Image (cartoon, rainbow, N blue to C red; front, side, top):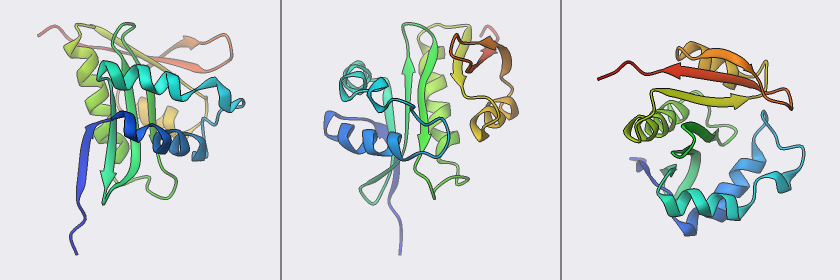
Length: 145
């Protein structure tokens, strides 16, 4: 049996599934689920800066770029589907959007001592400090074309 896999731009119809996925993760959990709302997702969807990995009509991963700030806003994979390249593919799309928007330095933040932090280090990102709430800030310089 062939599994239909696709990375595509998120749509308004995806928001409920994306919110469910975001709340299902084991790391980088929201201490207050109200911190990220469907309206937040809608903003990224409407700007065309949010993507999903879909397999057989099920969303297994999401990513989003803040093309106004030069940062990755979201990168999450549904528990049980990690280590299959879903995060890597979605991360690449989100980074490409930031580079396409003209940013020479990309940023993101994540909880310390998580698989996400190790993922970003392995991808060549460097630690550049901490947010006021203690998340690690990572940066990646993009060489001029």
